[in-house]
Image (cartoon, rainbow, N blue to C red; front, side):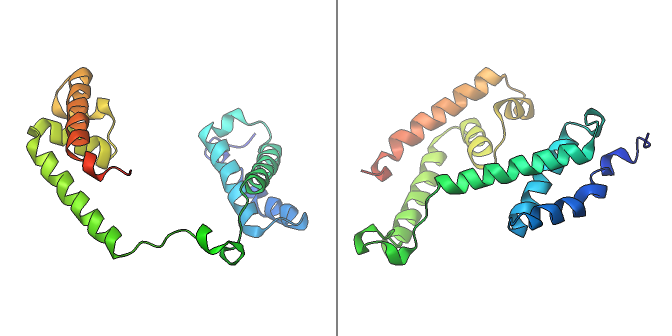
Length: 168
């Protein structure tokens, strides 16, 4: 039985063999490497103690990952831009888009300035920095319910103030 310190690296013994075997089956190298990496991450996340045969686990997980990737690509039909009609081409952003973005940014900052400081902080930490409500509550020394109230107030205020910028 391998030592506990060697177990997290059990996948290394199978890595090259797995890459070569999948490449022989005609898969693209970058797809194979992605699938193997996802399989290794999955094995390490559930703990190597839960995997009796790392080689078999990695082979099956890699094969499943390659199949999933193939299915996703089959569902997503892509057409070259040259094959599309002129009216089907995606619009390129022009100078109006940059001016509109600048106006929206200025309006957002002005609307945020109208809010109380705690509402501003909750909005910025949650929406712009990705903090969860419990994290904000702990940081500010507030209840989660109060954080949610501040967030609701901020969203309602911003929605009212920025309604002119909503798409038609």
